[in-house]
Length: 417
Image 1 (cartoon, rainbow, N blue to C red):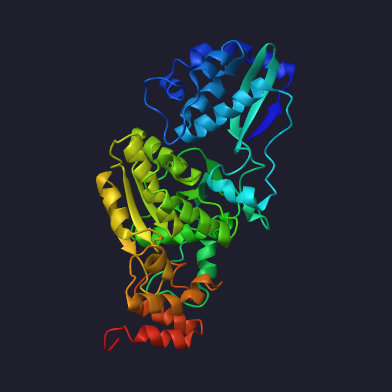
Image 2 (image 1 turned 90 degrees about the horizontal axis):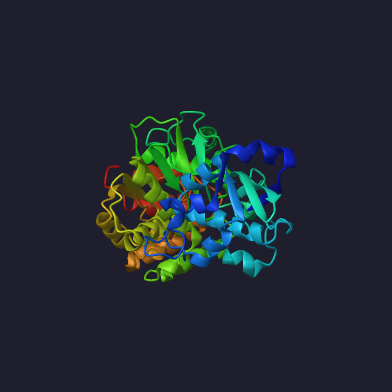
């Protein structure tokens, strides 16, 4: 979260459109965030009612800031209000949006992604309190961070299509990955605060934003083949490192029964799903790898916290890091249609991490192909790109020079293939 003090002149121009806090808190979007008998926000401990009383007389909102605050989902809204409270307590405090340097604290992004959130609160001091002039995305904190992907934020991005190269059984040449990269705007995706596109995706671990944009666009094209779309919304799950991403996966999986023990990725997505459902936004999702863990846990949070159907949503599960049986069950309970699943039988992520195939043969296949999962060659990996079938994967291995592993795959092909 960043702060920016505005000039006295700008404050005076906004004076005639101010909303007092006592007026603002009458709206259910804000009142439910504080202690009361009303519905609590998704997976977030409510703020004490005395804080709302304390804000009376100390806080006023320009109308556009008030509208923005009401339009946010519960997760984002409470983070912004917490920052506004901090500003009221000390308007002259230094900006707190710097990335934590301590490695252990960075790991605690699963508890709180950053010391500051990714909205810019523009305010002016107006004794005895402040006037919030606007609430908007802080462009300094969002977007692609070349060479510093650990600085990327958990956020929603609208990604536009640039090309129409397809990844299918007839088009897996050596240059296909470069063509797929060019399909999507992986340099300047647009931050958004809610899903307004028909298609959306949650990426997995070790995906910096520039990679997640084209990769999840490719997964969406495969999952919803025949559906034409020019953009989609990416729920970006940022990455610090392999070790820290694995810790976050384990954190969410071990917290299966404890709603407040899930990561902020989970609570944020739960709020996004609920907000879209309330608007009737029909959304076709893809959840890949760790993204499938986040999606399934987010649905679980919604069911326990809100309990209403999420039937405006559909999902396709690819290379899942969770158990398919559990994911299908929780989606069924929420009335979310699971359109398809694509899990390569040689992929250690669904087999071992997801616990979907722990048979002796499944273990052997997973371990023999583990190096390709962790490798840099997306075309050779059984995990990175969408799974199109064993025959296609066999040809991918041959093209990338992995002939030993191609022979292993060939043993599972039908005779005559």
